[in-house]
Amino acid sequence: MMNNDNQISKQTKLFGYIGEHAGSSSFSATLNKMFKKNSDDIMIIPMNIRADDLYFTVSNMKQSHVNGAVISSEYVADVVDTLDESSSLVKRSGMCDIIYKEGNTLRGDIFSVRVLSEKLKDLYISKIAIIGTNHYAKAFSFLACGFNISYFNENLEELMDFTKEVELNSADINRIAKDMSVDLSSFDAVLDFSDFETLLMIEKLPKYNFDMKNKKQASALKQRATELNAAYISYDDILDNLTQKVYTEIVRFKI
Image (cartoon, rainbow, N blue to C red; front, side, top):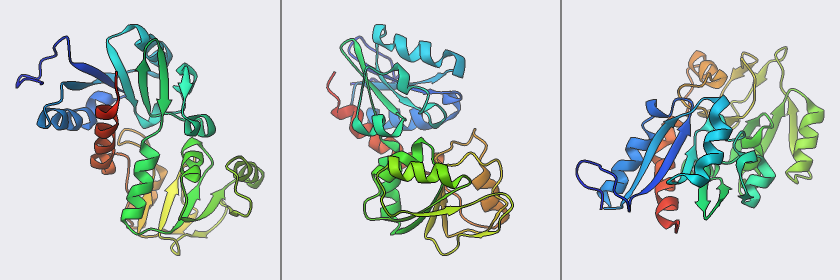
């Protein structure tokens, strides 16, 4: 059991929370409160890691006392090459946000996109507009059973290749670009997984607007939602859901 001073014993299972600004996030503190409340001898440590040091840090986890790590959203695509084993969703999407050390190997999986999917269901969201074709868009599409999705991207050829990759035979694809006027108010939610620096082409947004960026990352969707007086939901805004999922996964993990 973790004691009242939160000291680490030889038996304490250690996990990391890796991000560029991990220490400024309440992710670790929230999760550690849950471990303590449930008398779990587990602790998660925030690790501020620069992009240049990411590969070295994760690779050397095999020789450390750390049993795994949660990966902040800015690094989820960059850690895939450090893994020895991956879930099928990691392999197909090209992203990983939780790593487990198993013996002398690192195994990667995804939890955040599952949390996002469940959050949308809890809000009774059905009709979704996805902007962009990145790793989050891929992972979400593989888990999108039950949603009615329309896809938007600047490059339609790229979007067609994307829909083939995620095995969508009759997807609703649409072009979105800076020189256009786009009304997305007919959707229940927008998920922005694009690299647009601005979303000024969007004239109207729906009730719910999500991206998986944390508060330290620039968000074009947040800016446009503010301008249009629409609700914006970030990675940090669903932190309670994310930490609950990680808690379940880590406690269930057998080291």
